Amino acid sequence: MTTLITYLAEDNETIRDNLIETLREIADVRVVAHSASQAEASRWLSMHDGTWHLAIVDLFLKSGSGLGVLAGCRRREPHQKVVVLTNYATREIRQRAAELGADAVFDKSTELDDLFAYCVDQTGRLAQAEGSAP
Image 1 (tube, rainbow, N blue to C red):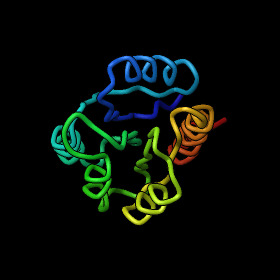
Image 2: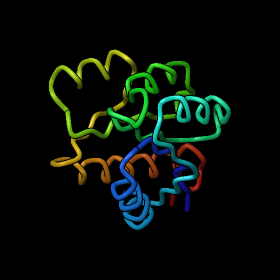
Image 3: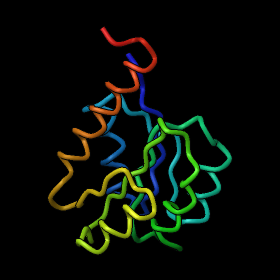
Image 4: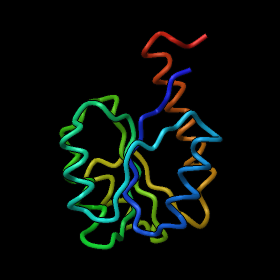
């Protein structure tokens, strides 16, 4: 089975831990690293350029912004996806995230199931691309 190599930028430890566990159970997602700041996230993503499949980014981080992380991912490979997971998924935030190249925006309070479905779909697409799909 294909594993979706994932990076998580989330400053709330409880949310982060719950997401990591749930993503592992629902989809074949392995969170290989995480951080609570824009600088750490941007540094990790650029140092591992091309090796990750999905970045899940909170909008408000301990320092910096998820939008800054997103802007730094503009020149990623086509197979690499970046999604925003936030409590502030307003129309304006969704539009701004799309302008910065977000593949999707999910509201933490109402769209977690949609995020999980997205991850399952991405794992399937990756498997097809790698030729390991049944």
